[in-house]
Amino acid sequence: MELIGLPAELLVSIIANLDVRDILRCREVCVFFKDLIDDDVHAQYKIELALAGMEDGPPSALTPSDRLAILRERQEAWKTLTWKARTEYDMRRGGVWELYGGVLAQADGDSTLVCAQLPSVIRGIEEKVWTIEDVGVKIRDFGMDPAQDLLVAIEHHTEGSEMFSRVHLRSLATGKIHPDAPKTGMLVHQLRPERYSYTIQTSEDFLGLLIQGPEEAACELLIWNWKSGALRIHLCGEFMPSFSFLTSRYILLTTYPDEDPDEEGNFPHTITSRILVLDLDAAPDAPAKLSELDYLCAFHYPMLSNNFTTLAMSLRSDPGPHWRPSPSLKVPFHISRTDRLFVNTIWLTDGHAHIALLSLIPASTFLSALSSLAPGETRRDFEWSEWGPRGSRFVVAPSRHTPVWVCYVYGMTFAMVLRAGSQQVIMTLDFNQLDIQRTLCSEGEAQTTENARLVTETTEFRRAGVFREPVHTSLPYWLRKTRPLGGEGSEGEGHFEAVMISEDSLIMVSSQHHIRKYRVLTF
Image 1 (tube, rainbow, N blue to C red):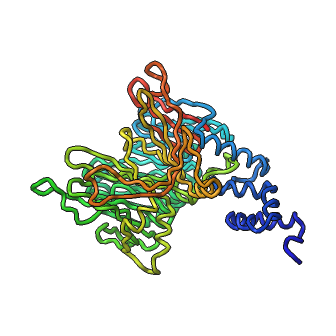
Image 2: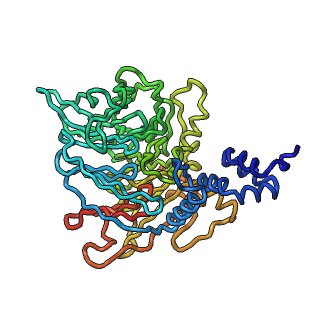
């Protein structure tokens, strides 16, 4: 019996269980299959989810037709940067804050947290504001994962002449000890009595903590299974300023050389800045030095000219790998758990001027390189020419790029603010490659509008004297921008210094003494 002789209902059921790429291949077989797929809402929803970089949400009263309509509304709103509503939150004076998984949390005083679930008009998320009046400790810093109802609060604790970092594992909803945490409700690490800064990240059962002292040479990276309390890796090293989870197994760690100028003020480079990949499954049991670590592989950046040296690096990506929102939100769909963009800010100096470069890299670039490793292979070096020109983009950071308001990437999209005369615009760089490929295949050349352009051409980093050789990158992306944001008076909509991004929001940040607000543009 020929396949097309089967009942249409059976064929549709079979097609609905195929991978999206296979569905698209079936669509090319003949007119019959094309019409069958184009007329089926389930198939269309599955295709458009994948092209949008989304995954289906939990079961609800919404039909596939409802979800498809909501998805199309969401895509149109973000492609035109047309928000549906505005919300404002006062900036608290606790000194620390976090934006993750659609929740904005701020310390208010030493031990109080004020949290806000950011709303979404399109995806049907209601705003919710709650306060944890007393976490029970003086909060030095904190992180969170709303999907796991997890609050990670760091306290500095002194016993005699010894100082410890206590990592408290609490419920984000109540502030009480998290039910999945170890019995003590905390993890403990001994510190030297100095001032420290923290970077906190989660990935499913893993909690990563990067501790940096007053000197950049004093860095420690610790990764625990926060549910069991088991320490999976303890790494000590110099000049490893940031890390990020690539997957729950693989860790990305930035590192750059410590270089002093010679008598003529030049920097005699012998090694480039790198992104290392660490394998948690192969991590040593005892504390290890970075210089002695048997890392999996390293991604090298181009060699700088002798005039420039690296001051700092900061690697960012949100949300963590395999992250999905809490089922209680009942969203129709959510961002893909695998499609993520990493933004590595590289600060350089020639001793006088400072410059910040943005290196934008999709997770697929790293994962593709990892798949080429032989079983058991370690310390593999990927030179810039092997991964950078086609697998990333270099962009000069805008003058207002900040090391403070760092939640500027979500999923495959990076957001930044640029000045346009007396006004400002928000720009997004969207690296969703499936959507870009569809555009190029269907249109040949994407239509450019006043507020959107598909960037496919190879670009050269043109700042003279930064690199030894010309540096080209070509990974395509959509460049979109809002209308100019201005306004009369000191609190007009154009008065903000940074922009952050979440799944349903663009957040304009104003931290000046007379305008301390988060202005949320809600989609």
